[in-house]
Image (cartoon, rainbow, N blue to C red; front, side, top):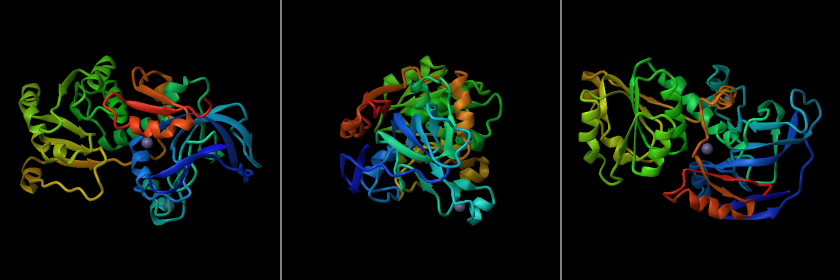
Length: 340
Ligand SMILES: [Zn+2]
Ligand SMILES: [Zn+2]
């Protein structure tokens, strides 16, 4: 098979590597569509705990071509989405059911070989058959599973007035599900007009174009929309400059969700008095756990729509261009199609 292989940070090649035989409980998948995501950019520079040699790619959709001994429930020929997370099942966190905090967790595409290859190997119990789901929609299963985690954590009260800052793929999916999930109104704010237009076409009520360098410049517009602030503010840019000035936009008694990924060493200054006096709740949401089945249902029944989300497609040999596309303002979601 051919695969993107990193031997060290920032240095990869697309090369032939030997297929290994399947162990008990494993399946081999011919990768059909694999999402490129911000995590892959972090991995490119050696962040996020990669193990080498590394084949990245954690948003894997493919066709089963071989099943190992003892596999049941998945048949050759079936299209599947692969849940890339592997839990140890015996650490303190796993025993409490908090698998997202597994102390020995491994992820395909981070510490184990992932999907930017013609083929991938996964445990059969991490494969979710997707029937005839459109492949573009299927490419959004893993990001949608992450949004499901966010929704579990947010626990949205019906009738809430919601602000989402950021318009990337997960923010788009989040907005679609919150629009259809009982919010009174969803406002999206981001610095890129075409991404706001995509969100608007998929049901967002209001959009606010942000000045990339001056988040506060938009506060007057937010005040017009919600004079007392928003019930729930979901920060999905990961930008410290946004998070730093976002608390005044949360209504008293409201919730701020830190959903975007900031740099590991970034810090913001917030007023403890404001959190105390205005009873503000701050929540986090990381990756996903047991989100795949619900993500597939959301996509199957059109509650998450891929319309306008996938803007860039690449062959395996163009992985460098796929990574570069992530930094381009005209890119919303990029995918690699390894059989091209
Ligand atoms: Zn991802
Ligand atoms: Zn564990």
